[in-house]
Length: 242
Image 1 (cartoon, rainbow, N blue to C red):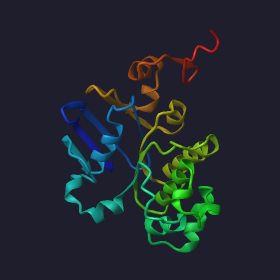
Image 2 (cartoon, rainbow, N blue to C red; image 1 turned 180 degrees about the horizontal axis):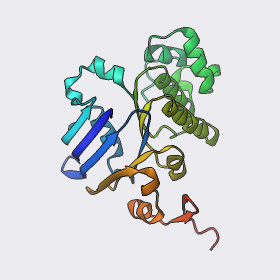
Image 3 (cartoon, rainbow, N blue to C red; image 1 turned 180 degrees about the vertical axis):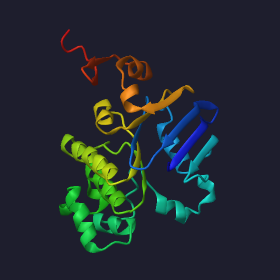
Image 4 (cartoon, one colour; image 1 turned 45 degrees about the horizontal axis):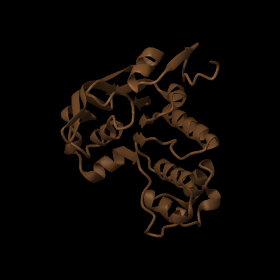
């Protein structure tokens, strides 16, 4: 396994976010973190990256993240989180050049894949949130790290690019990449997850195979929202047919 969480607990100030999480994350798998707003999903990713403290044990290649230098961690883990500031005046091409030391042909290849080839000369400050999100995903793909930690990678994206993002995650998983991602859309999670980590933000958490945890009553309780089962799919119950 690449990463192991044992009896892991997280706090935000005095608030307990999760307690006693046990989870093994293996190579070439997608682990999806689900939970309501403010539950601690982003904090969990930060703890996995060794950026904030957690109690219990988190190991990376059987070592604590603190045993790695920042440079060593950067070679192992790539992080996609909130959109970065734009006041530095960088163009899309310059942002991608900063992401990794790669050939110009690699930048063009990734730019085509993420549908930003026509944006390369544009300043980041002139992009929409969706265009900036695709730029950050392109920057992520330029880094050859074995682990990706993704915090809502489909945020800001329109439907077409959400689908492309989910396809990219599945493709990278199939190439051996290990991905831990926060998602809010249950259907997106069902499309990619090998295992789930569920966090309720009140200390409660569980992890396990996605096929076992994707169940309407369990997820409905987690989100405090009406869900229903349609065959093998869990969907929100918007009461459209009522």
